[in-house]
Length: 564
Image (cartoon, rainbow, N blue to C red; front, top):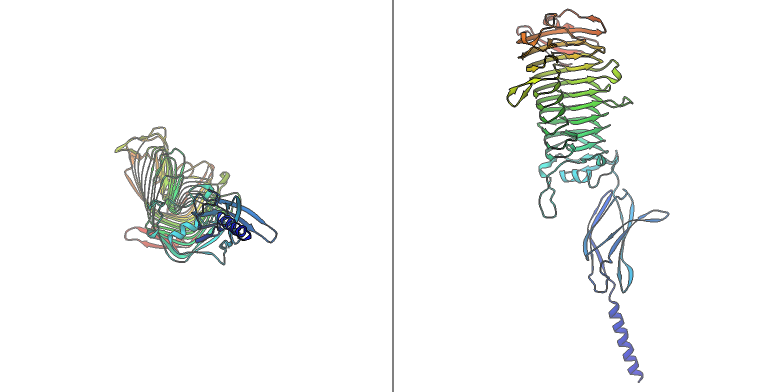
């Protein structure tokens, strides 16, 4: 009998153990550890005793004092990819895999992982290819981190496929202000090339919204195409659409194309809109820029808009070069400059060379110039923040709709240096522009064309130490009441070739070779110097502010100038 009892007890124990089953096992593979995220593949032994939907992973932030639960991920199957974001860099986390079996919750696997360090100035995050460039600056981005290019980055090798294996077109990085990049990228003179971006966002470019620092980087063959039907404002540039207190230092762009078709737009060859940002030693060569607008356009070969902030630390363009072609069509209002469309609030431009051929078709108010479309100093206080500049190239302007030249009911200013200037004191300038104008202007509006300022408003406007050398061709069907062609401008800075204002209908072409030592307008007092001959240009060019390297071709009556 005793043996029978022992036998039955053994059977009960066997069935009890079998009912409990073995402890489930978990396995992790293909870990991807980053600064702010962690991803891995988790598989758990499938077991009928495990309560369905009970498998989960807890993530605890570890410290010397305690541990804090920061995230919980629940699995719907026994094998899944688990991803957690929003982690702190250089921090240890404990990961616990739990599941419920035999009606109780158990930890079946546990391990500790440490996130990667943030890039620092002396230990930056190295970027070796296009996929890393995008991933590190988006999926694994840490604000204020330092990044460094280890190689040239070729975006023709970039690949981004969805779950179905379909390639997703690249639309750029940080396309909203909430995603703004605020770190530092050091390029080590490496080149980022073959970028193709198609976008319909508000902020467009390699970076849509940028608050960081970009230094010692070259770009080649960047192509940005923006088409946007929305009535809200569009900001577009080859490098970034909107720059907020950002820094661009030693940045070069070559052989690149920017095409924008949007209503109200800020479009620039480097930066679309520059708010209190510094652009130092920048080059944009062989630029092709096309702007189509149903309403208002701000367009610049470097940036469409730049302004200073209250601290006077930002809002500067120093040592810049732009060359290429620009094509613009706008129906309501246009501010265009080969360097800057609109300069506001006392921003600074020093030592800039622009050589751009622009073709402009508008039917609205226009400020267009070889250097700056419209310049306004802060609080209308006269400032010499624009100095030592060169503007070359051509502006071809027509007030045109489809194929017909139509009457423009707004003022138009076309100039070699600055189309409209308010409280500007420009020192050290060279203008060698050809202005080709065909327009109808309403009788109560004005067409102002000059090789220096198109028009200087009632506030003090001054031009000094300038060499003006170029050609104006102007054809207008109807004589506008205020239409004037001049060397230096109108409304406070007029100096006509004949000394008198002339309606453009009486002038087919004027060629100007003129050196200006000083032109100053202040209230009702006008001081106009006598013209200086081309032969004297070399002597006249040696001013205190800047020494020009002037070449004089007396046979062809032509001068050329570069910075020495």
